[in-house]
Length: 256
Length: 144
Image 1: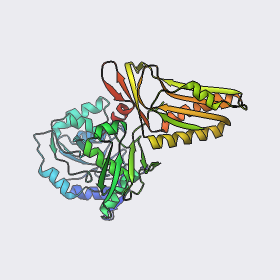
Image 2: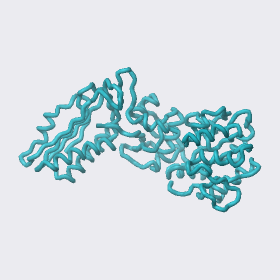
Image 3: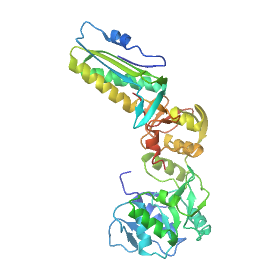
Image 4: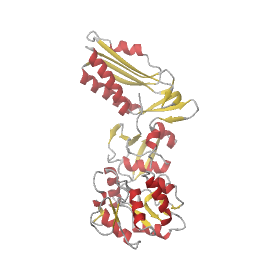
């Protein structure tokens, strides 16, 4: 998005950072904010292993308090509610190294709404030291306790303008159901097992439809690097979908 | 100026004749052939699939835009679809211009541009019986 997602306001008049703190306070003894550098603010966990992203932040928290269990929450999940965190905490099983929700898309762990137990510390730190950067890959290899996915949207994060449009439409309850046609070519035709299908969707943009399709068929492709066409012409992922439109998702092309 | 898809073998000589013109003193062409290896793997054949309507529209746009930029007399581009064997022509571009520089430059610009945006995909079939949609593995690598 090119901006600090924790400063965005989606609901309750609170920034995502303030809302996240409020949600976590309902289920945790104490709440800390992960930061890259020392801002002088209280209750922060400063990255101790360089700017290597969320896995470094998790390792930093575990390094600061090795005996604590950490509920790690991303700051860009506006549709997540207290009920989801309650479910995570109530279902927690500390005989496992982590408790998490499975992704609606592929069933793999959602690492940034996860309870990381102290017993995961050694493996997390070893991964960081080995140059790994992906918390999801680390979580996949832990002895984790997986909860069923809460659905596509509660754990939807904001990476693009289209994500923000979909999330705001759901928060405003302004989504409308429409019937559209989705046509598939090449690998998408093979992965979906169909050339074309008519679907009813409450997504506002092709981006939302693609997330639904990914979840429905476990498609291992992301929107990044892909293009989309509506009614036979290239368009943006933010295109406002209307009844009867024809959508084609275009994975990286390989002509010539 | 035209871009077309073809599900039958391409005749490069015919394309050359189509761009022939009394005002053209230079002709350049490019043919892309099906090769028997890719990134260390033994390729047995290639399968091309297009989103036909948009591929032809986008291909046409590219050919017209580049012809305008390089003062081209005439240009044709044909891209195959379907299952191709080693040595077959996957794409053929024929360009005529008053002088050689424009013909060479336009030919190169057309192939580069077509590879980047025209919705055509290729599946490589390897000699060991496996197959993969090219680039699909690269984008699936971080598919989470």
